[in-house]
Length: 233
Image (cartoon, rainbow, N blue to C red; front, side, top):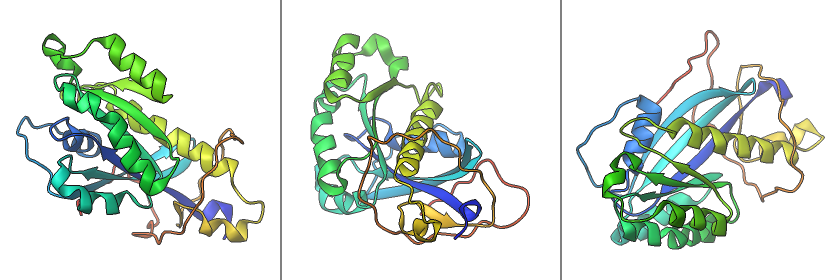
């Protein structure tokens, strides 16, 4: 397979307690919408968005997982194959903040060491905050994770969260890219397409991860590329 015939796809799991804004986050990112109505996720929801990053076509497949313990048996199976993850807690829910370590363990027990980001959502409700800013910063420092404060309602920093994970994953696949391009399809997240992206990314030789092969969900069609593509499972 030629280098110019591949597309990068990234499976991202969004985890955290219920009602922290996980569903709203992927709705905002993929569809550009926000609703105040809270509906508990039953099991797993899925949306995807296609973007360009450093002249490469990237398909982000976002898996929104239920935060309630009764759905653990269902959601844990959907962590498998994930290449990146978002750990979310809410400004107005201290339990969700204190549960972050647990969520990280759940994800890493299934998929090992993948790029992760820590997100404090609902910062527009800062007057109702139940934790100090320094506490969240200390958690991120202890966990050695990039930290973002977001407001899905105000669309603040949501794009930055997923762009950072895209950058981290692109660095990872390039740092482990085989010299023989005939074997490149065995790498997680690489799909055969009809586009011709250039492969330009700064390599990071310290970040590697065992890989498995995934089949493409769809083929890219010829013609003008769409900057935003979303679909619901």
